[in-house]
Amino acid sequence: MSDFQVRGWCPDAWRPMASGDGLLVRVKPRLARLTRAQLLGLCDAALAQGNGLIDLTSRSNLQVRGVGEAGWRKLVDRLIALELVDPDAEAEKRRNLLVAPDWQPGDDTQRIAGDLLAMIDALPSLPGKMGFVIDAGPQPLLANAPGDFRIERDAGGQLILRADGRANGAPMATGDEAAALVRLAHWFVETGGASAGRMARHAAPLPDWAAGRVAPAAPAGPIAPGPHPLGTALAVPFGQLDAAALADAIVEDVAGVRITPWRTILAEGAWLDAAGLIVDPADPLLRADACVGAPACPQASVETRTLARQLAPLVSGRLHISGCAKGCARAVAADVVVTGREGRFDLAFDARAGAPPTRTGLTPDALLALFGTD
Image (cartoon, rainbow, N blue to C red; front, side):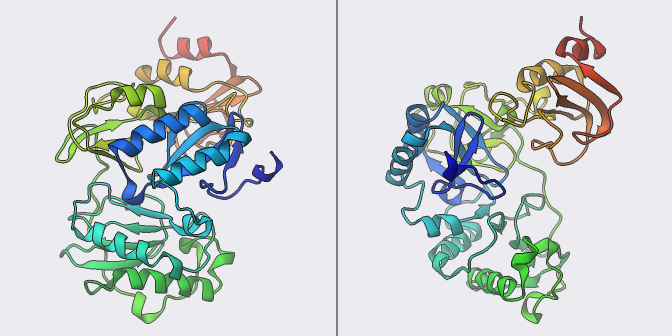
C-alpha cells in the first residue's frame, strides 16, 4: 500500500488516500448533483469495492471508504462509467469546484460552473487543497465554505469576483466570470502563491482588474433539514452514509440528490425519514461533531460516534468528540469537547480538541454520568 501512504493532499479517485479501514476514494459529482441512477450505482460500487460507508465532505464531495488495493481500479472504472469521475487524471485533479447546492437549471450558478468546467484544461496546476466557489444564487450560501477563487453576489444583485481572504471583490460582466476565475488562478501561480498554499495566505497585491471595492451580500444560513423548494433536505449524522440503507431508501420519486457542504443532502422530491437521515432541525445530533475514530483512523485510540450519539442529547450546546488531539471533525472551539487519549477521554469546555482538559482519563460511562446519566 506504499503508493497510497502520503498524506497532506485532498485525495481524489485517481489518488486515493490510505486510512485505517482501507483506501479513501473521493468522488466529485458535477455541480454537486447525482442522478438517481448515479446514486444507486455509487451505492452498489461502495458495497462491492468498499466497506459500504460513504462520507460527505465540506467541499460537497463524497468519499468511498474501505477500498482495497485490488478493488481500487475496478471502483474507478465503475465511477467513470457512471460519469462521476473524469477518465483523465489531470482533469479530475483540477475539478475542484464548489457550487451553491440550490442552483436551478439555467441560472447563473449552473451557467458559470458549466463555463468553468469547459475551460478546465486552461487552469494552471494549483496546490491540492485549492478550489473555486460559484455562489451566484440570490443570496450567498457558501461564505464559510472552503474555496479560494469566488463568484458571489453583492447587496445589489451584481455578480463579483472575490479572492478568498479579501473583504471585497470586483464586478463582473455577464459571461466573463469563468475566464476571470482562470485568469486569477494564473495570477496566483505567477506571483508565487503556490508557496503560500491558499489564496487567503497569499499576501501579493491583487491585480487592478481583480481588486474591486464591492462587498459581497450578507450570507444566508446553511440549508436546514426539512422541506425545501427543490424537495427535501436531510441531514447526515456525522456526514457518513450507509450505502445499503441509502439504496433501500431512495424512492422512485427522487430524480436526483444534491450534496451540500453542511453534512446535508438535498433530495429532488419527497423522501421518507429513512436510512438514518435527519429531517428534524431540532435533532441533537445536528449539534454534534465526531470524527471517524478508531479503528477506521490509525491516529485515534477511541471509538467516537457511539459516544456522540449517547452524549449529544445531554449537551445543550455544541459537542465535539475527537479520536485524537488533531480535531479533524471540527477546527474551531465547541462548548463541550471530548478528546481521546490512550484509550480514554479528556474533557474540556469552550475549547478545541487537545486543549488543556478539565478532567482526564474518563471512560464513556464516567462521561455520561457527568452529564446526567447513570
